[in-house]
Image: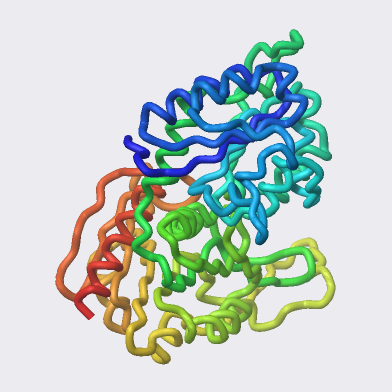
Length: 401
């Protein structure tokens, strides 16, 4: 995949894996990219700056005050130049600096100033990688939208075996290509997505819920983010990993979801409701734990929750596109088409959750995309692949509006 015309800044820090970074530069140059290397002083102890200067055909920056052509009166020029900023290897030290906002050398200063997508390839001893401080720093960086690749597991230079090896140059360059080649056809669009399961409490320790993991909603959120959208996710209970770089609003019950949707929906361009919402809630929520009485049955009275999709449809604004989901066990097309009309949806994603590989808590899905013009069957595929298809279909609909 070509990178012609792309400006890539590569930060190299002081780890034994620094020698692999030379191959990263070589591969990027062969793909047509213009590469600028910033080295920390410790990195120069592992590999000479001349190596990167020769491979990149650009001056290598090793000190804040030794490269005036990379500095301007506004701020760090390389920070503005980068289409993507890669740090490989990324030591525990640079991860800590990035998480804390420390800017005490050229690399950390430029990282703090850049608005470009940042991709880091961690490399360190297993104990350092698994240390709570490092894992907390990684969590902070992911929440800010920094992408991580690796580390891999295997034999480390120190003789230990475990997670900590930097990903191979070919893998890192492949990820750079994927990030830079993504379509930006949702740039400027506001997309609201619901994900996960709602919980309806019986008492302080028990609730009614369902098996939704949030994987489908999060896959759509990641795809929309990568295609340039301003994404907001309203999430209930989830077991899937929460994606980075996306605004999250956490709710618990269907009524909380209803309130959040009524507040956020009017300002959105696209609304995709992938959450699994409880249709009913207990008519009465006890403020103390319901105690078991031996020999006695427990009768629960349930009352209907608000129909959130219908409410969103009733306040639909011109130019908005509404997408719903229908998880069914029988009469899939009939039930889904009924929801499409009743809830003023532009698209409904219907799936039979009884089919292997479809439904809750798996990484794949099988679906039928239904609009007023017809339906398209989507065979077994990853939820991320289906997410891309849903977003493609939404754009088709919007182009006809």
